[in-house]
Image (cartoon, rainbow, N blue to C red; front, side):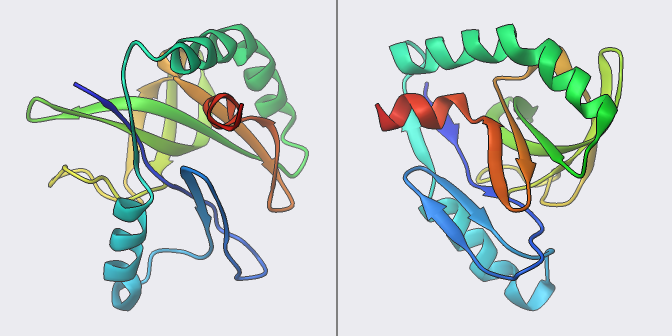
Length: 159
């Protein structure tokens, strides 16, 4: 069993792409004529990480410790975008997917899928899901097309 870190897709004003190591930040909304390119991009920028990887374990601990700050900042908004990575299951298959948070109401939160799942058939890019924010495996706060907080797994990978 492995954990798959799939790409992050942010809606960016300047329509450019910033890519780094295992995480891909891409521009724009899902466009049917570009969907195949989007799918291929996500699949080619996935990284497999063992569940017992020390960096993964540490990044999950950092996420848990910093989740109260993340939730507090979400309530303030400040022209920021908020993302969480969660393990999502479909038909017995697990995948670790980034969601853009739309609302946090206690443990019941809502977010849109921000990358193309590699294995799922029913859940797809742009779908809105009800999630438990306290199951987050990583968090990101983004402002002006830049990550300003979080991305703990990427920080571990870069060490």
